Structures are given as structure tokens and as C-alpha cells.
Length: 334
Image (cartoon, rainbow, N blue to C red; front, side):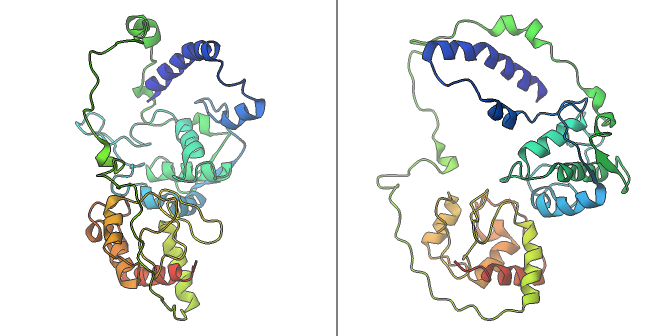
């Protein structure tokens, strides 16, 4: 990854002045714009903001913000990345590349969490939260004890197991001249033809009129009975497994998954502005309504209930969790 980043940066340095002079595009970046993007952290600690976080605090934040995708113990959920484990696998045919087994610098972990996580809500974490999450990731890899505190003062001194497993990328000096030349701009190919279509991404219309919205089924009137507040509170705790991808309530926005406000009792696939999978739209067209029965079946085993769903969540295994989250979702009417 580091190698590709260095080459990309080099290409940008060569290309940008040419484009600016040739086409007159853009303007110089303002200082505040540069500052907003200048978030990188170097292995020597340059760029780290003041702050600290301990393992126990990190465990709580990780459970709330990260566990839905990465598991309670950083073991990964379905195809979402593992962050722990993988020791002694780098020589295997299919190595497990985690923070503990593969990553060379802890600063990369801090920088990535700070810059890009949680998924769908990047850069919403405070520095202390990031320090705490990284401390918990180290603990999950058995690299620190449970009383460990990570801070801007000790992060740069922490050595990961694979620190010596990388070499300096010298391709700019040894190979760059071999693959850089004048780009072809005219008649570069004898013919151009379509070789693949994007049906796999569900973005290619299937036929004439495919872009027309199908008739929306009328929502049935559903009366929500009074629910024990304790059950709603329990459902709120269960929803922590969902909140990295979904939002509820006033001001909620679509993330990786759609807003779930008012979902109970309404037809599936109706959230404005969200692009659903074909699997869901097919079931919605067939009349799927998110009542307690269908929601419980879906949340217990999403892939079994809806073949082809894009939701990566493995499912809720406890009956009491399904009852509680139904009550919690029903408490959010449109």
C-alpha cells in the first residue's frame, strides 16, 4: 500500500502543473482548505494531536463504533477486515494481514482510524477516542496489557511485530524512467467495444423503461401498542451493533445503510435517496412490509431471509435481542 501511495503522489506532482497551465482549471488551495486535509501522521509521531486513551475506554468505544463490522474482539465479521490475529501467517498462501501480524507502524493505524473511521461517519471521533480505539486494537492482538494507556507521547516509540518486514520503495530511481513516456492521445486503439456491463453492480438498466419508478404499495395502517420502556432501552443497546451503518431520529442521514426512522409497519425499500440492492427491491416489489415478523426473520439471518442482500451483518442470535430491537425501532415513527 505504501508503495502505491508514493508512486501516485509522484505522478500527481508531475501532472498537476501541466493540467493547470494547459486548461486553466482550479485555483490555489486556501490555507484552511489545506489544513482540513493535512491529517497525516508519520511514524515518528509528527502530526499527532495531544491526547490519550486506555484499553477499557477503547473497548467501550470499539463496541459502539466498530464492532458491527470488525467484531467485538477485532476478529472481523463476515468479509469485514480482521484487525487482530494472523500471527505466523505471512508466509502462507492466504495470509491474514492484521495490525498485529502485518502493519509496520502504529502511526498508520492511528492515522487510518482518525481519517476514515467509523465507516460512513469518518472524522467524527475525537483524538482521545482514536487513542483509546488503537489501544484496544493492540490489546486484542495481545501486544499490551489491559492497563495500557496510549498517548501522543508513547505512540511513536511503540514497535509493531512486523516493523522490519518492509523495505524502502526505490522504484522512482530504478524503474520510473522505464514506464514513463508520452501518452497516446489520438487513435490509440484500432477499435473500441464494450466488453462487460455493470449488471453486477445493479447500475445497468435491464430494459426500456427500467428507470421509471415502480408503483409504490400503499402502507398498511399499523397501530403500535404501548411498549415497556425497559424493553426499548434494551433495544437501544442492541442497536449499537447497527449504528455504524444506520441512523435513526431527527436529522438522520443515509450511511452505508438507509435511515431506519419509521421502518416498522411500512413497505420495504422506501427511504428517499438510498440505492437498495436488487434483492431488496425485488422483495419490496413483491409486497414486503417490515412488520415484527419480517424484521425478526431478516435480522436473525439477513442472507438467509434475502438472498443477495448487501448487508454484511451476520445477524442477531438471541430471541430477546430481536424482540427488543423491534420495540426500539417501532418507537421511532416518521
